[in-house]
Length: 227
Length: 407
Image 1: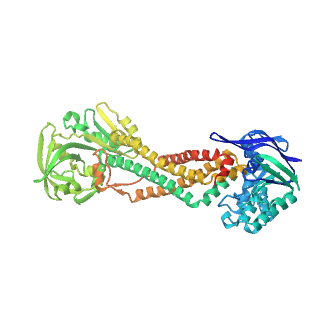
Image 2: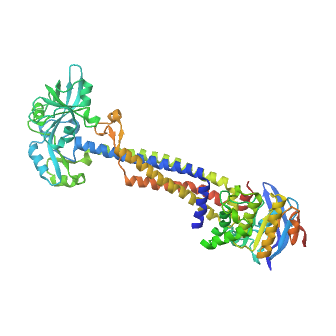
Image 3: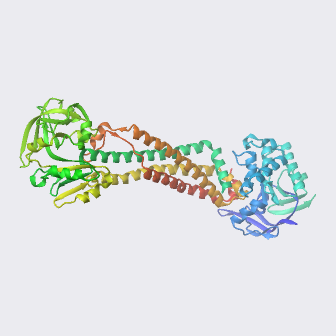
């Protein structure tokens, strides 16, 4: 079953008089349970593509369909609703809220979704356990290593059991060992929970973990192969 | 909403220093306003009370034609049967004390000094003049049949270099528009704590004052003190008689009451300035908080937080800071008022700058004024929320992808 589909999606940024074509007509379908690596050089449009898939941005032309439903022209409130329940994000810079503990960071999306009391607590503990951080509950981001922070971010992305997790260069700021751990955790969670992962990267170490590799070049899909 | 509050609360808690500084600013601003309100309420109430106990009483009966500004002593302007009228007034329920007085203007002189004074002819036995009797600091109080004794305020005596037992010369206007002069012995010195009274008021027994000014048993007014000053109008109505003027303390203290009203404008302006400072501090704190957290806003948006939720979160933060700050300010301010109400503020010589109609004491006592204090607290809260609208709106309209890109 398809999770997300882009049809002839373009995205043009206008800065002053200058137009930048980040995406020049992308057709791409991501299926349920896939673990896809989105590769390509800097500026090839990986992040823009993730933002369109993640309902953070609208295409200049073309369509985006989430589970068959056209989400291209949704209002910002509707898109926020969609993100909250359906899509999880993992960013390159870990993107935890400073000052909040690992527990509280993972709790955030659950708070926003109105999950109450013990249910919330159980879910956070389950996720902390899943990413191997049961002992780091009360640690704040500045008290954790980059690898640990990224694992918290993965747990947070998974909190509301989204259908799609979008990771933007999740290993870029990690050393080899931590990068490998993070990829292993993502792959394991993909296999265990069936959650769909799309992982934009130009880190060659990530590719072997993927089941499908989509290559972007100059804003177009230049290669799409299943491993 | 509870969830948003939890997020807002956590944000305040993790920026402890910033939150604390803002709280202090709000609390100090509100505390200052509450204390000032209390001081102001006390100042005005004291001033009115001083004036009532020393000069106007709660109710006065005068002849219709009496003009206080001229301190007239003409027979037709005075009350003929003052003792009878006083007894009638005294007999009314709710009247604590009523007594005739005679007012004249005069000049007290020694060989070196001359000072213009107000001469009060009083019944020394009446409780109407309890404040002066209780304020006796040297010598003796005057007796009704004393033909040569006079009471001076201590401040006046000191400035003229006279003390108890000394002779002074007193020149007064008389009823036939002449002047008469006689020597008096200073029997005693009093101190009421109201410089504008003590500096210019000399007291004689009523009968002596009447013969001296040739008013022959007449009085300028009957002054009455009531059990409850709010009944002044009702009692004045009951006493209404053709040919007599009945004046209540409210009418006679118009100057102070008007001063209260006019100075309210200035007070409100000052309040506005302090509240504006508080508003700027809050707005600044929140704006800083927004700018520091642009990327966080992006993350929260990515997590599915809507613009209006982000706005609500900031307003909750401001509201929490505001509520705690205002509560602290009320507490601190009330302590300030309590201190002013018990220890008082010593004005000293500053009290003498007031006019004779506005009787500031040397010590001003604060008075907790619940109404204005509530207004101050509510205004502070409203202004804080208004000031936080812009930063909150600014945060809410950030585009998630732009916010995420910010470092």
